[in-house]
Length: 194
Length: 217
Image (cartoon, rainbow over all chains, first blue to last red; front, side):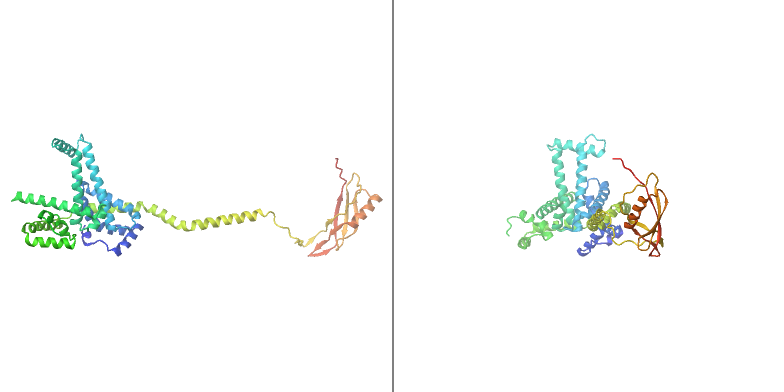
């Protein structure tokens, strides 16, 4: 963990050599990759998955996918955006499957499932459907991903667009919505505390 | 760019703090901010929010998880050792596979042609017998019709160094004058290979046996 803080992402010229080593299956290269990316990826995944305890499992899956897929990395994008794209996809899939599990298994004895079932019933009383609640949550999650990548990971608009597979204009609009929403929440909290 | 309301200009604040809006829009926002206090306060809130997000504590992997990840990576890499070996083997053999296959096929065709050429050619040069001393041999026996009776006719012939019969002696069999006359003629017209001694022709003896053979048609 301490080692990772001392390291920085490789430059473009170093990246080609690193990719070559990774493709050759060098354990040192993978250790280096792990030292650089494990903390930022864990941070991103923690903000994306609903169940925090499963963030480590998702991170483990992401690393395995990187290991198995590095041969197919064609270097059309940077290694960094390729890795983050895998992480975002894996975390999104996990989040979707988690929510699907909860919405489709209302009689599960799992406490969280019961809680969500109760919430769903409440939403139904308000005239909403579980699907609309799900859609809203997905929408919020998409906005959150863009904000986390921009504000916490320092990605450029171009990099965010590449990682999320969307246009730069969509990145801008998601950031606007995300910041606006955060600002409103912050203002409401401040007014409550005053 | 001219903004008609504060709410319109505020929608560009997100792009403005990222430096992602055009120079013209930037200039318009600055001009508006120079005389609009509420919008300036709103922009400050955006900037505070951004600074707050930047300052948020990043979640980091625990030492246990870091170790687990290292072990997982190591195990996965060692699991791939056999696959890597197979890939390397394939990479080594692929460039030489086609030429070597061609070589093997050409070799097989050549061997087939060599075997298909039939029996080896017989040399016209008579071989010199390697034995130091060899007896005389019949080369051409003159065809003569004579009757040996029921007993086989056995005789010893003396062949000189030129391959000619100098004399012969009947050891067993019929000794009629007619038979003797025909035997003389046959010996005269027959050709013999002389006996050889150390590569040189020399005189020698040869035992011949004749027997009448009747074939029923």
